[in-house]
Image (cartoon, rainbow, N blue to C red; front, side):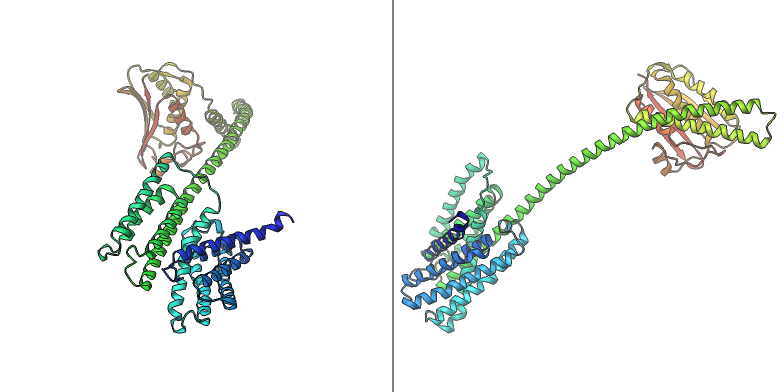
Length: 553
């Protein structure tokens, strides 16, 4: 016979042995000269077995329950012979039905190993346990009444006592079995290990004062709940398994001391003691099952968040790398395409200038306008291509500056002179205001590119017969270059996106001039690379002022 064939028999034998062992514990905890126990631990063993093994657990539960009940009848000389056998078998069937029904209801939705990991699972476990315990208690009390062990008029009271004992047994024992059935590595620090003796000492003091010294003194009422802070300490410091075991020990010792006539519940009648003790055990067990489930949910949520954060970080890194590669490929494409287009456009512009000059007297006015359109469009396209090349260079991180001492004022004045012709076509007065020499380490070609863009924009968006002012001055350790126009200005929304690539926040120029939407974005990056800033102040309908600020050193 192989091991798989033997496994069901071994499992049933272990369940039956555990059931009988915990039944003996229940009898030890029974009130003197009775078999009435405040808690019936085998009910917890039976339900835990059903949750862990499912329907295959029923033979072990049935055998264990039959042996335990038959032994109880013999020990207390209540029944003998065939009567004891039949009564024990009927009660065992009720105990087995309780475990099987509870397992079927809970296993349909929950994993037994993780049953107590969530608060809603705990409440489902308690509700189902309370419901299925009705089966065993009804059958058990009915058998007792049928065999004369209990009077039928006392059926209701006996049923409540039996039911409370079974429910308390489930809450008392089942969590311990479910918690310890799967081996888990102990993750305690050295400080946690040092806490264990302190907790044991606190438990000894608790039982000594609450159950021995104070005993059933009415003035010590509710002192038994002083155990709550200690259990909270264990819960938050030592984890679920230690808490579950501590609750089991506290409840077990409390029951044993009570049936020995010690503690706050021992002074009352047996019925009152039973009810009060069962309430205490159930309340402590349920409270800390819910607390530990809540803490487990919190820890699992934190763990999931950490895992999600790590996963998101990995995804972001992967996506960033993909975007970096795509951006490099885009820049390479822009560079190659712009280089090829620039050669072709230079040829178009050259030939259009040649034709416009050599054939001016032979072309009709309409044909001359067409030649001008070809030349202007080609120049616009060339400007766009040049800007695309700059964008590609800047985004690829290849904007190398050839810095050398440069007279800022002279460079700006030269740009004003070069743009004078463009200003005159719109009858715009282009004025330069500045005095002195301000030498700053610059890439002169790139700096002149920025100044030309600023002056071109000022002329483009200024009305005819207006004025554009260009000034250079020193303020503190900065050289400020300002270009001020009295044109259309811009709104706040336009200013916010003005330095973004391909942003055309403003409309076409006052003479219909077109814009690539790249000039200012490139200009800002060039100035930033020089350690300076490019800013704008504008009022819609009144004009704009662009300011470049450069450090003197």
